Image 1: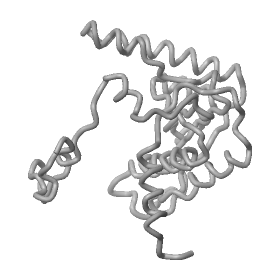
Image 2 (image 1 turned 90 degrees about the vertical axis):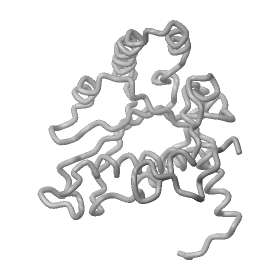
Image 3 (image 1 turned 180 degrees about the horizontal axis):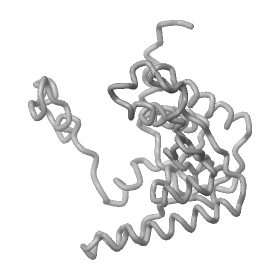
Image 4 (image 1 turned 180 degrees about the vertical axis):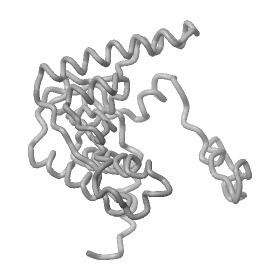
Length: 227
């Protein structure tokens, strides 16, 4: 494997990262099996603490299980909506499509097996959550690999997690990290959905980079995105 990448390859990586979107609207076009294998292979090549590789991928093909997960979303979504008091914000939230559980051709539950390689995982002891972080890196790999296939992924986080874990028969010590809807999107937006619809703007990078201590701006990042 070459250690060198061309400028064009570098630019492609950055293009893919910036073109990734959280997808909620899916076409009915099926995802080819070979494409799904490539996406999962990319996930399996994510870095992990102590080379633990704590992830598993449950392909949810049962329409009945999907329906129960959709019901869980709807219950939890109503609870989330009830927490908003500002009328305009509440109306915007109500208008958002926040899942594609039944429409997406593929549903994948990504789990973290926190028992794997126990009792000693190199590097995990001082920060036990790093197995969860490692699983999130696998999910990001999936998202980027899907994007280059023209396939979209939507992460459904508005769920009753214990209910879904029980429904999927996860053993003790295995935790649900993400429930993903996968398929060809109706469109890839120019911006993330929540930015397009006015929920929030992207923060300026210069406001987020510090030097040596919290709150100390790094001089080379003094300019804002508007500049």
